[in-house]
Amino acid sequence: MLGFGALLILVRAHAAEAMFDFEVLRYRAKVLAAKPYMARPSRVPEKLRKLTYDQHRNIRFNHAQSWGRREGLPFQLQFFHPGFIFNQTVQISELRDGEETPIPFSPRLFDYGKNNVGDVPEDMGFTGFRMLYPLNLSGDELGAFQGASYFRLLCQQAVYGLSARGLAINTGEPGGEEFPMFEEFWVQRPAVDAKEIVLFALLDSPSVAGAYRFTIRPGADTVAQVKAVLYARKTIKTLGIAPLTSMFWHGENSGSTEGDFRPEVHDSDGLLVNHSGGEWLWRPLTNPSAIRSVAFGDRNPRGFGLLQRDRKFSSYEDLEANYHRRPSAWVEFIGSWGSGSVRLVELPTPDETNDNIVAFWAPDQLPAVGEPIEFEYRLHWFIDQIRPPAGLAIATRRGHSKTNEPDLERFVIDFDGAYLSNKGSDPLIEPVVSVGDGAKLVHAAVQKNPYNGTWRVAFALRADGSKRPVELRCFVRKTPHVLTETWTYLWQP
Image 1 (cartoon, rainbow, N blue to C red):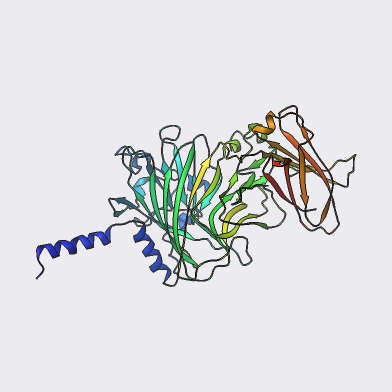
Image 2 (spheres, helix red, strand yellow; image 1 turned 90 degrees about the vertical axis):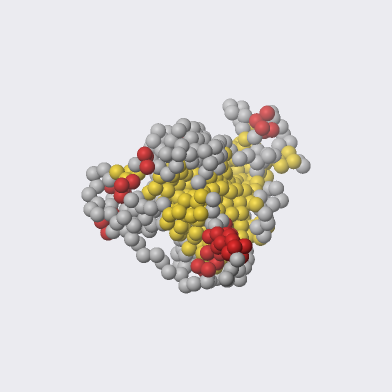
């Protein structure tokens, strides 16, 4: 017979085992990955799956039922109803002092509008959730998790634009992409004066299972610190860590507006990479005619992101989409990430309804199957630009002259920056242009723009007739100083 002391030890040990934290979730992911993958069956009735986009949007969560509203918490949750393309439900639980309590689904949480959906199963579940926080005003939306491992966050003064994902697998590879899914979420109940919210998620897919922790602090720069551990079930060809997904239909470098009345239509206009050696690379986005991928190799890079640099309303002329207010997203690496590459995958899109841009970090080597893959990073969402210490490329244009050397392809890049804008004309400032195989540089020049203080590099190329893609690089220097980031571009003659 156990004495009181021994019994107390057993009770405490059992309680400790029941307490939820990241290590508990990590263990669950490891156990899950050791088993064959089993897709969870959909519990969404066919009638809901057949709803149109507009019909599904007409199902609205009752604001009075928001999680945390009754207690006046600074962070509140509202849940998404299944239907339309959202036919996979997730389990969402609340955490209090390490104890997890499932948040039950109920049709009474929703207003179905004009929809006649019949009997809705009481145990169907949600497809995700949105977070509310007074970013600018009370009741503002902070972000949302819904669909596969997708999520979006907002900063002050921003509207929704690009998305992030928990993981990308075989993006841009032959045979198609695999989309892991956050199967379960746990939300830590915040204090009444909390400035951040903590979420946990369990990810699963045929290739991998993983544990995630998100610590989200909103503001002018909303920061989500992401900690994750993955366990692979099988060898993965391309593992995409910290993936960002965006849309680029047409811009100033497109040479055409696709018949659209707006000068530009995009959520992001470029990829920025900060290499471990300190070099900054800017890659303007394109809408290619065929899928294309580029890799920027490095070891322990400092960060990368998809940015919306152009903040002028006149560049978009869209009062509804507000593309000038779409946030940028920047991945700040924490710890040592080893060797690998920042990859950019661009897909063709016929309009603005498709996300066609993906950027992520791809490690060169992965641990053996079953061994942990661990990483941590800060994901920044902001309107104000992250700026390289030197100047930056603010516009990319290309085209032909019909009267002067019409056979040449012309590129015009505008650079800006504190030093450049304050610097008058200087004959020692020069452009450095590199042209890969497939074309020759005919001439290049740089000059001060007296109307806005920027510096313009203009150069002309002649293709060699092979029609192969040509890699281009350009920056401005005043020997021995580099005055700008490195502009890079893949030109298809």
